[in-house]
Length: 168
Image (tube, rainbow, N blue to C red; front, side):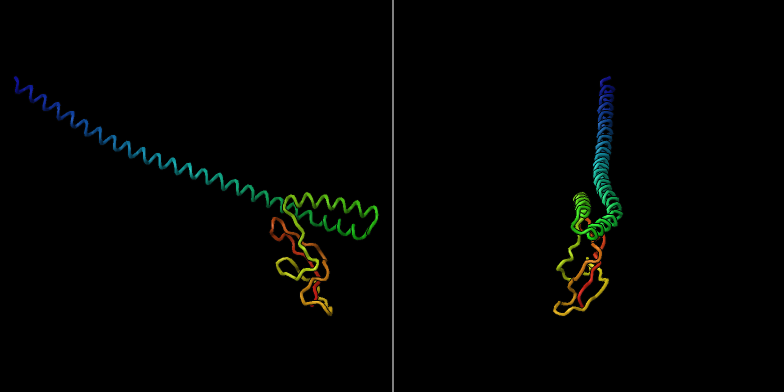
């Protein structure tokens, strides 16, 4: 009977050892799955953060594009105000147009619009379009003589080139 008891005890020890081995294998598998799941979650989190950043950048770009279209549509209004101011001279009506133009330019400049400088400037293909070349003695070639139509920059980017008369 004692031999039987020892056999049963050895069988129990082997069973326990087998169960422990199986549990260790299952634990390794679970730890591997956990690490994979954690890595996947971290990648998804990083992807989401990048997606959100790209969306914000795209929304800002769309906002600029829509603003650019609106400002581009307002440029003829600015031209009309300039024409009205120059036609009316130094009178009451001209002062009213000048005040309206100044107010409109303040609002548009808050959105990034600036006039391209032409007075006493050298002609630059990036900012100016020559509509006429005039021969004038004593002036260097390419000097801007007169502005025919104002040019504008929007956030540092050319929105409309200035049309000018230059010396040749």
